[in-house]
Length: 94
Image (cartoon, rainbow, N blue to C red; front, side, top):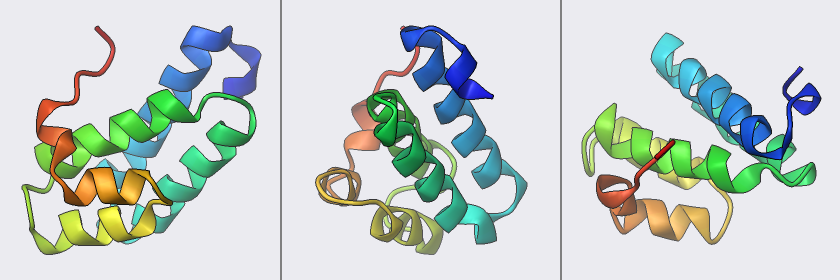
């Protein structure tokens, strides 16, 4: 469904969808990460992963168990950026 959007909206669609997984159930953290992997395969990964960086801190708080689970689920270099707390300074959808 997200692939039907133009380049800018495609990344936002994937990111918003991944974020909804996190809002729905923290057990869906792996699915949120997988969705961003799918987004990356169609050139929309940057915005999707940025959304998850933001959510890592906004939804879970730095160094909480869910924060750590989300960061661990992300591929490099996003995982390292997440663990470094970049979500606290990530601006999404300016």
